[in-house]
Image (cartoon, rainbow, N blue to C red; front, side):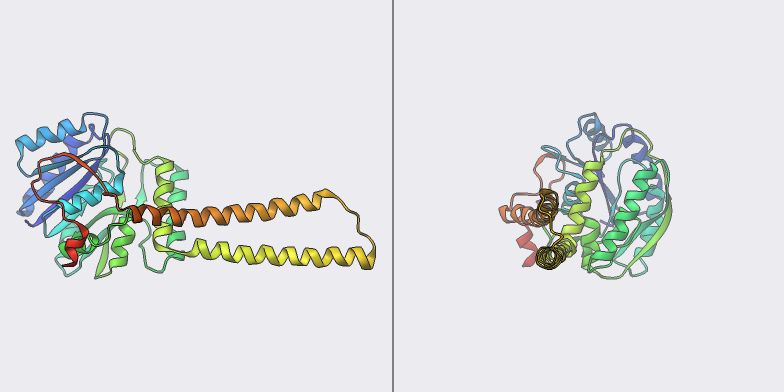
Length: 318
């Protein structure tokens, strides 16, 4: 098969029919053998019913129905695991990322690249707060990680089968796929585009989910927070030592020492705050290590029309 299109969906009943028609309108003229893999990530609307109706009418439509909501990145992972195409496109169902961009993405891939990602020039229909936080996050991540993660990009991209097989060797629980793809390496390039406003429905990416994704990206590809906790510990210890010297000087030399609890309380609260922040940072890393040690499956499939066996990560090492 030439091309697989992986589409994670969560309450996207308003967009699925339009997305399907636009995808067909783009890919049919390319004269490729292809499949659409819709991954239902615990939708509570009629998204699954719509996809199943499409699968009855079009044998190229495949679906994966999770037992519950496992998250966007896990849904993409499931689609990659069960895809068969020599090239795989990852695209969301909200039509903010235009299916028409698949053509230039695929053409770039044919030029010898293994990854071609879509880079946003502008983002329509999003609040100023979301644009600002996204911009700050991408630049912060780029500055503290040891790998080059492209800024102003999401998961919309096309990757080769070689990259898909490499991703299957990385079964960590806290997924940050765009970071993993950058870590893998190979020849990568981009195509710029203007991101459209969401076609219909409401986004499933709340600020809480965005914060969790940001934490996954930072803790998965950088140890800068741990270093910051260490440095802040030394800095606070140095300040406390200087305060001790000043207190001794005031008590035995100048005699301007007046005992009182405000300075003590400030010191205790300051030190306690730094300690709690440091423990919290360490706890984030330990929590992710614990999740990987338990080795629970990334997802559980309730229903699918794909007969391909889901491989265990160890099988890719053989």
